[in-house]
Length: 528
View 1 (cartoon, one colour):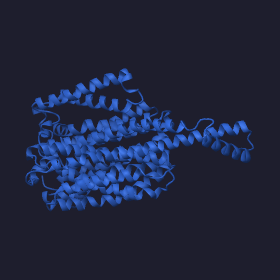
View 2 (spheres, helix red, strand yellow):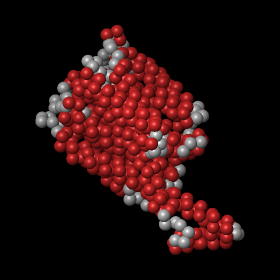
View 3 (cartoon, helix red, strand yellow):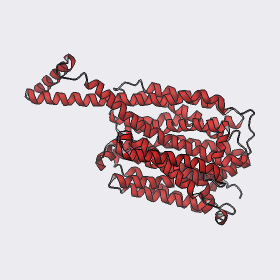
View 4 (cartoon, one colour):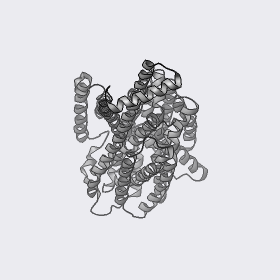
């Protein structure tokens, strides 16, 4: 099959990158709308965060299976059906009237979206000649970074001017247009979808993967609110997660046709690359979860202000992607980029943890710019490093597993941040409440001053004014406790990046690998 040219090539690039960005936007678009969704559905923010987690779990489950599904059904068929699933699920999310209903449809949306992300990359690579594929990597890498960060901006605008269901409904026209363009301009590969009869389905591996990841995510997400192992549900899910994950690893190493080829983990360089990929995914997705909630809940930003504060520094960082891709195509090692990228992200975490509670929107510009450069300098090199040292026949397995690890890192990070924030909030609030008792000099003085001001301004009696003063102080303590908890969470994320950096010595290969561009192309198609 010859590479498309001219207008057809432009349409394929536009369609695949837009589909990938749309899927990635939906990983973070709801972050700025959690408060509005929680109020509308009558739940708290911790419960509504399942809307994020359900999407992430579905992505993690489907991504490693896309290679098999694309080969089984035919890549073009699988891509178009996934687009339709994503679009229909987006509509149903927007029509949901309960939290359970919304979570179910977000999971379905994530099933379709995970396929879009993976298959788009393979179709995009197909549109370029081997010598042009570094440019394709740069284009896709720009979307990889821009998507999760653009989500809060789009979500903020829609919350500000419309309502939270529009965060999902906005996908519908894009999905319809992309589906039509894919039908017209994306060609079928020779022999596509004709291997179904010869292929065996690893049903056991798929079932173990779904059970293990699903139960693990439930434990991480609900452990804090369920008082951990005091809950029977947490106990049962913990056992199921452990058994399923160990069973999955054993089965995938034993079966001749695994849904996820874990044998590539025997390569030292690849094994340690997945550690870096996990932490990079944790930082990428968790940072665009924690920051928007901090900005709205504590700093008083509107949803739109929160999104706009993320956009300019991200756009500045995105321009680094094609530059890094070009340098790596000329033989520059990816390892220095990974070191600098992880160091910059650590600096971002620590500068964010020192922010004042009365800052303006643009006070975050420098920290967020550092974050954008850190992500840009680590994501694309890690994609390259995922196949460094692997034989060409293992490229597909390496790329597929690496994509899954990134999504698992993001899902784990969001669940961890949610629990950590709740724990630290309770601790900080208890510490501050210990100093706000009747008779404490500073507390008594503060209550008296507020009560006197209220009596002067509103004419309230001393009893009513004192009660209102206590309420004002309680709200201030609550806000300060959340503020300190979010700052602690930034530091926690930074610690992951610090701890993993020394392992960079294990990323080196004995000699510079010669990358077979034809094998990479075929691997991308099989993996995605």
